[in-house]
Every structure is written in C-alpha cells, then in structure tokens.
Image (tube, rainbow, N blue to C red; front, side):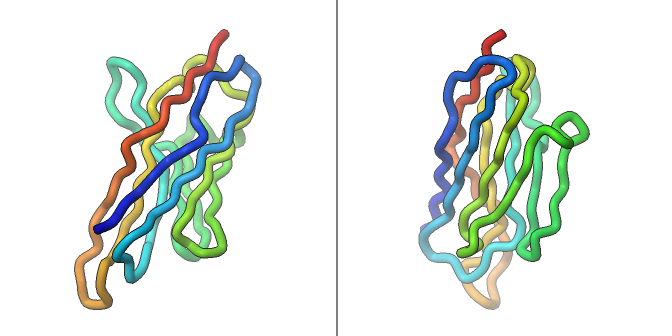
Amino acid sequence: QVQVVESGGGLVQAGGSLRLSCAASGTIFSINVMGWYRQAPGKQRELVATIGRGGNTNYADSVKGQFTISRGNAKNTVYLQMNSLKPEDTAVYYCYAQISKTWYGPVDNYWGQGTQVTVSS
C-alpha cells in the first residue's frame, strides 16, 4: 500500500509563515510529480503548486512569489514554504503524488488526508 501524509498546518497571523511537509511511503517504484492543492470552505479544490522529479515547478498565479515548493533529496518528500500569508490562504491543503508501484505499472495519483491552514487577520 501507499501512504501520503502531510504535516505542518496550523494557525498563523496574517503576514506570517508556515512550512508544510509531505511524505510518501509504502510500495513505491518511482514518484513523478508531487504537489499541493487546497480547498477553502465553499470552494472547489484548486492547484497550488507542483514539482517534477527533475525539479521543474509550476505555481498558481495567486501564490507566485509567495509560496515555494521543493522536494527532498530522497524524492519521496515535498515541502511548501508559505510566506506573507493572507486570510484568503485559509484552506485545507492536500498533498498528492504521482506514483508507480512497479516498473511496468500505471502511474496513479495518491492523496493525503489534508492539513488545515488558518490565517487570522
């Protein structure tokens, strides 16, 4: 089985920073893209940022210059450094990983259970 587990959420004042972490574990042959989505109350889940195995990154326009995604050396971890946080960044943040469990197998998306980020004004 594969597990994707996030950590690092919490309550922070506007202008503060948080760093989210995510680790994938279990039966894993390779991990391609890892990334973060978020879902605010009453809104659809939206892309925040992604990072490929080679380090190429993609950000939502709303977080460019504010958030930084990075990947650990072991390639099974991903981080999201969030600076200058605003109340509108309040959401549940979900980590996902595109994982192949065998060398010949399909690539599937695995999701974490989410971590709450609350930014107070």
